[in-house]
Length: 277
Picture (cartoon, rainbow, N blue to C red):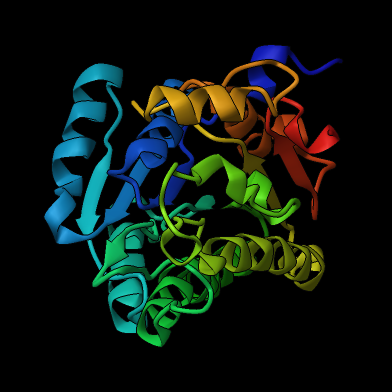
């Protein structure tokens, strides 16, 4: 008997951990999981109040969402979260590695520290520790639990800049000398490309344990950026615009559900066609 389409996307009783769950994209990921009847567990820094975000999900979608404050670079905190989730729900089915630093582009003391020549080692270390080491640790702690159960999904949130280089012309400002021109920091590309490599590793490492691992590389999301930047970027995208904040929900649900049961180790590029040019 054929499987009903609605059943392919149904996540009832599945427990899904979302790191960076109180942020812009993390909130969208959690919403589509909740709409599909999963139980989202939002992990984020205490300052973001993930419990508040989880309460909103529970109120809107009627699911027992949970918000837990944690530093994902601390293995002991992650192990504590694992134990808390297992004690409350008895299982872990999905991990979305979404947390990342958002490296800034700004001038300090007459020079732009985002430029490669000036980029501080402490920022390199911090960005890689959250975006890449954090994803590794979460995969280690939560992915191992899925492997023990014989089934699970890991989804790494990469970026179109995992497959193409940043076009630094997007950020140029008139009348600034070259040494002060803002650029997309090197760590963003390195972290996102590293997540794609981690995805392929995990997909082949736990294939016999029934754990699938995929990545998604979203394009830029409109979030009130200056008109000049939006216009420049839109001209590089065949669809002619930036993404809406909720426009990746369908792809997230697909990769987290049984609809993608024969897909592992891929990087789904969802960039409005930008990487085609």
